[in-house]
View 1 (tube, helix red, strand yellow):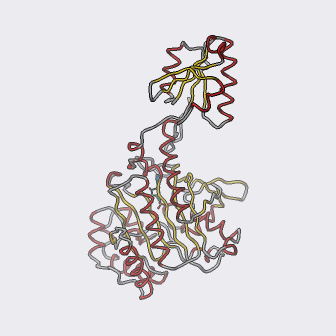
View 2 (tube, rainbow, N blue to C red):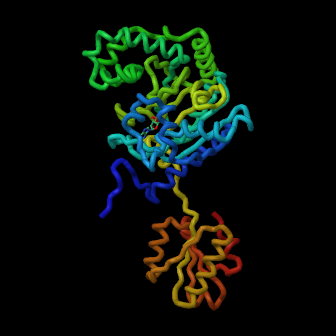
Length: 414
Ligand code: AMP
């Protein structure tokens, strides 16, 4: 018997309504912020990710699902930002509108060690704004993320905020770390020893306590930020304060990918556990568009992990499921023929309808209607056929009455 690949999940029909609720709420809110949906392909040239995420990043080093075809190499996308930027440049979307606002949902693929909250195929719900360096966009996008979390009935999350500064500032920060840590390498955890060589910024957000103490001891604060970046970050914070969007300053927050500059942020939730506590994250990437051959313009985005949203969302608990199905039960051959006509009539009117095909007894068929959470049951037997009526059972009211066939649609009200 075949089993699913480790780190993947079947999303079964009984879980779908939770997914759809998140997707529907997301679509409504993104639309109200004037974001448009974009659906890039799931595969791209692997070089796109190497170039944009950074050769030294963990994703590129260890986590890409690669597909080779002759001399070409493709990758299943580990995230969508690089694809969206590629689509923006390739389709000259900047010519249509200077500022583009996109949102997306869909599967992402990373070859990780599977564990709770860490899958090899997982789903992002995210957005990107391309075309502006204005701090107003940072404020908008963080406010939007906060609005989404509230709409998903998630509380108890913390929005963590930091600024990495421009490319020069990042270099300054890297130098400060290199100098400050060069005599402490032996005291760092094994991962950070490697990070020191490959991706030193990631030492800043290491979860190991010893590493944290060493890093905090350097007293870096915002010493690496230039005045422009300090001003930009000040305006972002002031805008969030003005809108009463809560956040915590998190001076050691860095993101795993090379392309981030200036504002970075993360949404954490304690219920996810200490290791994978991020619901989502994002930040600015003001140099990525031009480095991939596009115009010199700013951009910012974020992505939530949908599986993690579902782990902490109260959306399901809050809403009482009310069915909208009409279930038809026929008794006898003649009634069965007539019931098929009724079934198609209801479906053609856009009313969800199904019937009992397995020859069950009336009692068993009613039980099945109950299992399906049918709102109405239509029962039709020889008696009803002769009188051109059906028996209409309202499952939530617990009542039933005879209804003329031509009046059936009028009587079915959800
Ligand atoms: P990232 O692109 O790594 O910043 O991820 C954004 C969000 O996606 C994270 O905060 C998680 O909620 C989610 N995420 C990232 N990687 C995984 C994974 N392997 N499995 C499940 N969710 C993930």
